[in-house]
Every structure is written in C-alpha cells, then in structure tokens.
Amino acid sequence: MSTDDPPLRVALLSYRSKPHCGGQGIYLRHLSRELAALGHHVEVFSGQPYPELEPGPLLRTVPSLDLYRDDDPFRTPRPGEYRDWIDLLEVGMMWTAAFPEPLTFSLRALRLLRGRRADFDVVHDNQVLGYGMLGIRRLGLPLVTSIHHPISVDRRIELAQARGLGRLTKRRWYSFVRMQARVARRAGPVLTGSQSSREDIIADFKVPPGNVRVIPLGVDTRLFHPRPAPRVPGSIVAVASADSPVKGIPTLLRAFAKVATERECQLTVVGKPAPGGPTEQLVGELSLAGRVRFVTGIGDADLAGLVASAEIAVVPSLYEGFSLPAVEHMASGTPLVASRTGALPEVTGDAAVLVRPGDPEELAAAIRRLQESPRERERLSRAALRRVRERYAWPAVARATVAQYRAVISETARRAAAAAPCPGTRPADAADADR
Image 1 (tube, rainbow, N blue to C red):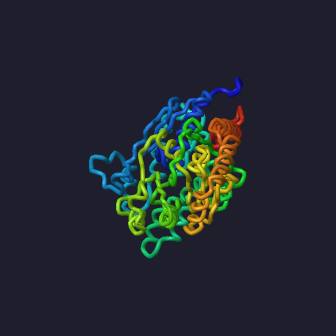
Image 2: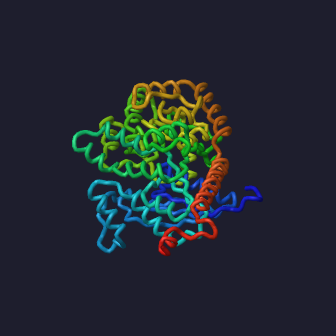
Image 3: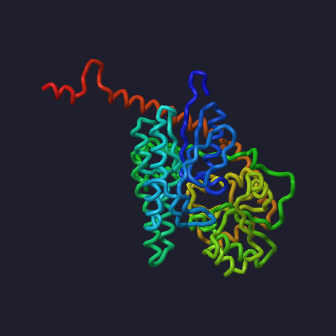
C-alpha cells in the first residue's frame, strides 16, 4: 500500500461461505486474509455455513434460518426460531420451491449496514446480487460485486437434464437468477476470475462490458504444494459438490468404472452426496462400493495432503467460471485432467489434459493414458507448477481488488459532488414554496 493511500474499511458480504468446498467460501477466506495483510480493516458478513477466517479479518455472523444445512436440508423451523418478517419470507419461498438465500441475506445485510454506513469506505458483494444490494448502494456506500460465474449457466445445464415436473421445480428454484441479472446491471463494477466468465456475464446478465473487470484468482501455496512422499499408485482425486449436475461427478463415476475394470485404482471425491440421492444410487448401479469414497469436513491441511498424494486429479465439470480446485491441483503438482469448457482451458493452459465435458469414454481414455505414462505425468506436473508461479497468487489478487475499491470510491464521490446543489442556491422545492 502506498504511503499516500490510507487504509480502507471494507465490508465483505457473502450469503453462504462453505469453508472447503465451493468457490465462494474459499475466495472469501483468502481475499479477506490478504486484504488485512495489506493493512486494511476487513469485516466479513456471512450467513450459514460460516467461513473459517484466518487472523486479521473479523467475522460478523448474519444468521438465516439455515434451511439447507447438510444434516437437515429443507427443514421446517420450529415456531420459536422465527425472528422477523425476513424469516417468514425465507421459509415461505422455500415452501414454494424457490431459493431464498440471496434475497433474504441481502435484506439482512442492508438492515445491518444502514446503522453502520459511517463505518465503511466500500462494500464488496461476494455473488449475493440480491435486491438489498441496491439499497446498500442507495445509502451512498461504494459497491463492488464479485461474480464467479453467472448462475444462469447452472440453470441451463440443470434444465437440460430435468424431465417432466422436475423442469418446473428447477425453474422455480432458479427464479432468483432473474433478480441477480437485474442487480448486476445496476450495482456498479463487477469483478470476475476469467475472460470466459466475463463473456458469460455480459451475454447472460446483459452487464455493460465496461463494467466487468477480470482479476484471476489465487492459490494458497503455503498449503498446496508438492510433497516429498511418493504419490499413492492408482489414486484419483476430485474436489466438487457431489450432487451438483454442473460439477460432472456422474461423468467421472462412469469413466472411473471403465478404468476400474482393467486395473487397481481408487477414487476420492471431496464432497458429500445426499443419502440415497442420485450420486449414491449411481455408485451402487456401477458396483463401485469400496472403490470410491466421499470425504467431507476435512481441514485445509488434510485436503492439501490428499490432493498432493494423488497420482491424478480430475475436474470433470460441465462448466466452470474459474475453478479454484483446478489451481490447487496444479499448485500441488498433481497431473490434471479437466473438461474443455468454460474457463478451464484458460486457467490450465498447457498444464492439463483437456477432454470433452460429459463424455465418460474420453475421460476414461485420458485417465488410462496418464496412468500408463509417468513421463507425461511429470511433464504436466512441471507445467502446472510453472503456471501457478507465474499467474496465481493471492497477494496480487488483493492488490488488484483494492485498486477497484479505490476507483469505485472515487467515482461514488464524484457522482455525489455532481448531484449536490451549488453553493448559495436553494433546492428547487424550497424555491417553489416561495412562489
């Protein structure tokens, strides 16, 4: 930070911040740490699940009804849990098959910041995009928004796979996307992690191109790095939400089933499938019990050790706006197979084998080739480490983000000055009253 630039007071908002799986929580943890390390005061406002922050930033919990907790999804709250009309709105939207959290979190955040507008220089919305964000802007607080990728892409993929009544349910669930597009067009500068995501935001949300800036994300190389211990032979790892169609886990399971008929191998998915859900059912149909394990709730050190111990990593997604797991695999020197979709080719460059998304045959063939070629695995590992050193560092992400904060603060002050009445003049309504 330049000696001429005062430290900023930053409110960083996130409606949910899962610590180890899901890009929003991971982004929040690393960005808040690096902003604090630069000398800025950072307060993180988050709904459940809450983030695991490192020393420096402060956590301000914004409790919801937590209707989608892992151990009790779509739960009905007890009468004593309701606190106000926002809680009633939240549960009413859930009962009508909508996803309320972006809207209801934004309303709670607006209520909190209305009483603390003098405490912050800038507000950073981590992909909330609820109508309350526009209220925050009307308070006079400069607003920056991160969109990791437009959720309209997830909606298209899930609707394409849904049938019958399921299509109506999915449309209702994703009804919040229309709100997010409206807010994105009016909220001010938008930050995203890749050129691919920028193009999708402009196309799907109709955000003016000049409002969308690309800042590639980083990786924590203190955790994710190669280890001296040999990799576990035949081990394959994927870090993804197990039941989210966009993450492509069914494609990976079908590909792994083909490979597993020919050689000894094990697949570990860092993600939790719903009990009895489609992912668990597919594991049973493919007779993969004992060959596939799902892990969840592991700490950062254990996750990093797992990724670094694998012989091959896979990102089988049908779409990615950036993919922090891909960069973590690369930083660990783990040979990577990834889908040729979204931002993945842009992120990985020559440091991954790219395959057609949703094609288990091509994915299985790529895994086999890497298993049979130590030389190719070593080439990918070296290319990945080189690319991470050159492109993906969280301190650089934080500095570039602060530059956007200062730009929007200046622009907000300029607009306020332009709207203020000239000295010596009276507002029009006061002049009219004298007539």
